[in-house]
Length: 241
Image: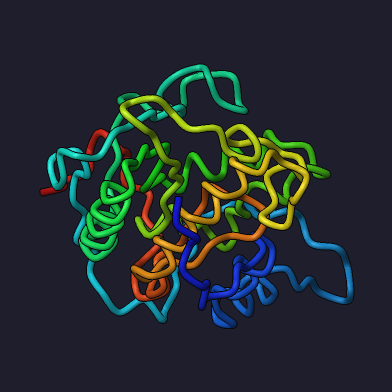
């Protein structure tokens, strides 16, 4: 198996990614928290955040239709996920068009080495992000997005993905949605082949414009994610080409 290409985009942690969404959102949140005469304000109900820097209209495509070579294992449409229940009403993956185009190029790179892409998740409605946050213990929230700032999944710009070979999922450094340091890209204790496959996938994804998340080997963000709005359209209601 050839050595992966050099990585040019540095992974970011989920916490750092979320704090980078924009000062405008953060300022709005802080202003809403200020109370008179220093009194602690009553908690405000969470509302869909608006990012004023988003300048592109959504252009979502159905990944299964866009490239029939993709394979899918949409765990959130089953009970086999960290929440232990069905979160999506149907096993569907949609993403912004540039994301889909880049993924298709990664698929071509993978095929040249005898592999293919197996997609776990793509666009995620904001209401699901809020549910995950509210039901995750505080000490594990490193692995879930804060709904006050939204997730890049909510923008249709994040992909949870692994590799398969001949239809069989490969072994990676940890299971998908593993909330332990085993999922970190810095984990070097995993089997050598798992580390090699993870780094190979990372090299292909980075080469096509994705930025890896440091604490989840499966998670990649489209480099221009910030240009798209945070969305809460239910998955079954998304109009995707």
